[in-house]
Length: 306
Length: 283
Image (cartoon, rainbow over all chains, first blue to last red; front, side, top):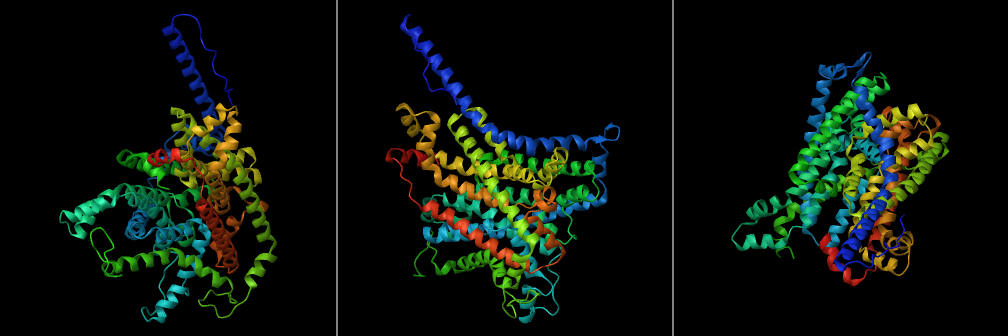
């Protein structure tokens, strides 16, 4: 770190010139201190740059490289129907999961924002508990629950709601259920943070001006909660797009996500050209969505949502 | 009680009974599946019926007596501990530097620190796999720790930076004007006051490494397989009840760690009264 000694004061000369010189020296010192402090972030940045970012730049380069130099063949191959189907599945699943997360997350976040502080803390702990629980444990739980002879099927049969066991896992349904379970807290957290900061007086004012409770909710509360909702949507949707673990386990190989194509090309075919082209497209979609919504509502809200 | 208005718009508690029930159901959906694993882990049957036909600890015995599970557990805990140390040190240092310097570089650096959270995990995983293949770091503890640190540092930065935002840097100025050097002022004045968030960040880094799956699938093979990698492969093949026992132990640990962070946050932190209004406004 830099020394903390002050710059040598300038004496003699005209008072005004003296002041200007002193001020310039001070400014210079402030700047050099800011530089030194910024340098504290370099070790972390270098590690992230070397381990995570540089290899991605390398993949980017690989995606344009064929046997004889520059090529677009890896990207042209992505137009194959199998890849198009994967892209379609990925988007369908991501939209569905995001929509269900809104439907479940909004009421829950609203409820937590309305109850007293002690109950709210407790409910938030229950929302955070899954986040702190291992992803694999939660996938395992759903595998057990949704099996052919699993808990859900047994109970549904015992209650006489179904005759034969339903196929609940190793398909689209199971994957969607598992993904909603993983993603829901990421919807609730930013929503709750925004709802908590909404001034209650606005609702009182709306009621005073003759709005029915339903109308006050839709015309005052909902618009004010939109930043949190957008942040939640963006986090959930983007995480869904690149999600690997849950679809791989609960999809049982029948639900092909974009990320699974990437894994397959690396592990089974060692096809780095295709894998990196798939990766570049995934990254472009992710950054595109974040950039687009960031322009709309401000980047701080997305990052601050966690 | 139920007739009393619950909101500013005069809806009674009875009038929003449906909301309480819906909220309760959603919370159950969030926590029940994981909790259901606990009784299943004490089942004496291979088939995971609920309620279990009989009780036993055979799956715990299976876990503790299998060498490969034990090795994987030791590996995971070693990696998580080292990741915690590295990422807490580097992340705290970076958060402090960026928060105190107020330069444009600091803002850009903060955005750069968030990249590992934004970039899809699978892409980071194959990138690291490619890099390590050339460096010979695949299937090494060093490789796993460096990769996990990259994923944990952003979380440490977020956690520590958010508590530094409400911390009054003038206290450090005061210490320095009394002759303390900058590092000394940080260690004796600032650090004790942000220690809750630093410890929370460390626990978060630990659990991030312990739970990391995708990167480990690529770079932690052979005798360096982590617990999550072994679990993932076991889950892909069949639903082995041993995993229920491991899951129960992991849930227990999550509860302890989460409880620890909550308890820490309750501990009142003494702050000089003069900075309170400003700090509150900045948040």
